[in-house]
Image (cartoon, rainbow, N blue to C red; front, side, top):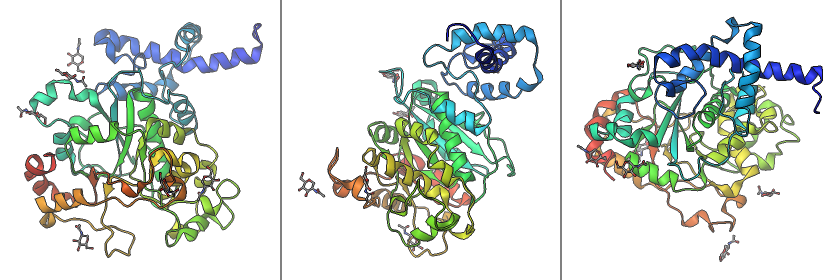
Length: 411
Ligand SMILES: *[C@@H]1O[C@H](CO)[C@@H](O)[C@H](O)[C@H]1NC(C)=O
Ligand SMILES: *[C@@H]1O[C@H](CO)[C@@H](O)[C@H](O)[C@H]1NC(C)=O
Ligand SMILES: *[C@@H]1O[C@H](CO)[C@@H](O)[C@H](O)[C@H]1NC(C)=O
Ligand SMILES: *[C@@H]1O[C@H](CO)[C@@H](O)[C@H](O)[C@H]1NC(C)=O
Ligand SMILES: *[C@@H]1O[C@H](CO)[C@@H](O)[C@H](O)[C@H]1NC(C)=O
Ligand SMILES: *[C@@H]1O[C@H](CO)[C@@H](O)[C@H](O)[C@H]1NC(C)=O
C-alpha cells in the first residue's frame, strides 16, 4: 500500500476535489469578514455559518483546474486526520448519509455544553414562528447571554411548496438543502434522515434531535425542555406493536416485499415526531439494510406511511432498550377515524387546554423488548412530560401568544 498505484491516486484526487473548491472559494469571503465564518474549518454554529457551507457547495461545479487539484492534495492531508470536520456536505443523499454515519456517536468535545437540535419538517410557512422565537429567546437578557449556545435549528422546506415569507429571526438561514416531499411515499423519511444527517454534521455538540412539524407548539419553557431532554440517555419514540391495520401497512409494498430484512413480527408503528439521542441519530443515517426496504414505493398507497413505520421498526430491532417507547409530542386522536388528528382552533386555546395537555400521560408501547426489565425496569411506572403538542390551526397563534409567558413558558 506504500507505493501509490494509479487507482488510489485517482481516488485521492477525486476525494480532494471538493475540499479544494471549498477552501479556494471561501478564502476571499473569510478575509473580508470574521474568520469563524470559514466554511467547514469549524463546526461551531452561529446563524449563517451553517448555511454558508451549503451556499459554497453550490459553486463547486463551475470550478475546475489543475492548480486547484494540487492545492487540494495538500489541504486534504491536513484535513483528513481522525474525525475531520465535514468540509463539504454532499447534496446527494447516499454520500450525505455515509459521511454523517461516521461522526462521533457521543456529543463532543467531552464536557462541552450539550445542545438540542430542533428539526422542522415543513411544506409551508411556520405559523408559530413568533411563539418559537419567544421559546428560544424569551427576552433581551437571554438573547445577549449564552442561550444560543444551547440549541440549533434546522429546517427541511419542500422546495416545490410556496412560502409567503422567508424564514426569519432564529429561523433565518437554517434551511438545509431540501427535496420535494409527498404523503404516502418514503420521501418524508428521506427528509427526516436528511435533517438528522445535517444536524449530526453541523455541530458535534448536538446531543438530542427533535423532529417537529409546522403545526407543533411548545408546551413548556425552553429550560424545562432542555433539562428533560439532555437529562435522558434514551430516545423518546413511540413504538407500537399489533396496532389495527399493521399488516396492511406492512404489506403496502407487496406481502413479501419486506422480507427477509423485516419480518412482520418486527414491524412497528409510531408517531414520526421523535426525539433521538445522538447515538440513535447516527444509527438511523447509517442504516442501509432496513432502508433498502422502506424506501421502496408502495403498491397500495393508502396504507403507505413509511415515516410512521421506518423509525420505530429500526430502533425496536436494533436498540429497544435505548428507547423510551413513547412520543413527547401530544396529539389528540380521540374520536378521529379519518387519519387526521384533532386540530385545535383559536377559540379552543386556553390555559386549561395547555395544562390538560401537559398533564396527560404519554402512551407507552407494550413491546416486550422495550418494556423488558432492562436498564430501567418497566415503563409502567413512567410518566414523562409532554413537551410539544399538535395540531394547532395557524390562527391559534394570537391566543397562544397571549398566554405564552404566564402559562406556556411558566413551569
Ligand atoms: C461581517 O458580515 C456581517 C454581515 O454579514 C457584517 O455585519 C459585519 O460587519 C462583517 N464584519 C466585518 C469584519 O466585515
Ligand atoms: C429573561 O428570561 C429568563 C429566563 O426565562 C428570566 O430568568 C429573566 O428574569 C428574564 N429577564 C427579564 C429582564 O425579563
Ligand atoms: C451561561 O452564562 C452564565 C453566566 O453568564 C454561566 O453561569 C453559565 O454556566 C453559562 N451556561 C452555559 C451553558 O454556558
Ligand atoms: C380531543 O378532541 C376531541 C374532538 O375529537 C375533543 O372533544 C376533546 O376535547 C379533545 N381533547 C382534549 C384533551 O383537548
Ligand atoms: C426482542 O429482541 C430479540 C433480540 O434482541 C429478538 O430476537 C426478539 O424477537 C425480540 N422480541 C420481540 C417481541 O420483538
Ligand atoms: C421485572 O422485575 C421485577 C423485579 O425487579 C419483577 O417483579 C417483575 O416481575 C419483572 N417483570 C418482568 C416482565 O420480568
